[in-house]
Amino acid sequence: MGMKEDADAIRAGVGLEAIAGLLAEFPPSEQTGKREPGQIIWNDLFVRKKPPTDPKKLRAKLAAGLKAQQRTLAERCLRYDEIRTQGLEAISDYDLTIQGFPGNTATERAVKALRCALWLADSHVTYSRSLIESLEEKLASLDAELESTKKAAKVSKAATEIPAGYEIVDVTLPAHQAFIVRKWAEAAQAKINSKRKK
Picture (cartoon, rainbow, N blue to C red):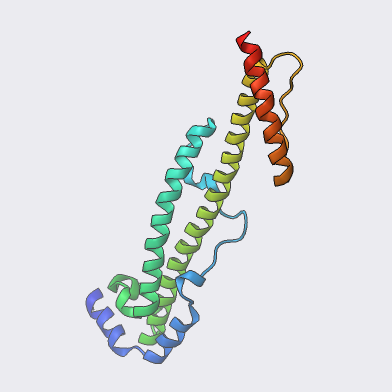
């Protein structure tokens, strides 16, 4: 018996209640969750390659990788939901016929094939979702690092331009105090500018 005939025999002899029961065990893709924390990390994106050491280059690669993974996740969710809603119609004859052992009934073989296909699809969804989360965390961390570097460079540059008797201060204040400080800063800037002109 060829693969096509074997698959047709399984599809014809399967118990639909068993298939419906199996499909009910698997939630929709949006409820599948993700992997354990730390199991999938952002540098999985760089299989067999070293991530760039320059933060700007790394950020560009991660941002591109994040977009690609978001597309991949959408495709994987569609595939998972297709198997979950269509059952045996969504899996190939090959996938259907390689499961089971001699003596298994058509229903046993179909349930094994469908369960395997759903586990695999679920694994792909949870992997992509976890990788996306890790990429987003790393991008946020890189953005903070780049912003800090930018501020430090700005302060360093400004420090070389400050006249004697003035200091640069970086503080976090409540809104009403920040308003007062901005007014002081404007007045100080005006004085600094007038001293520079002299």
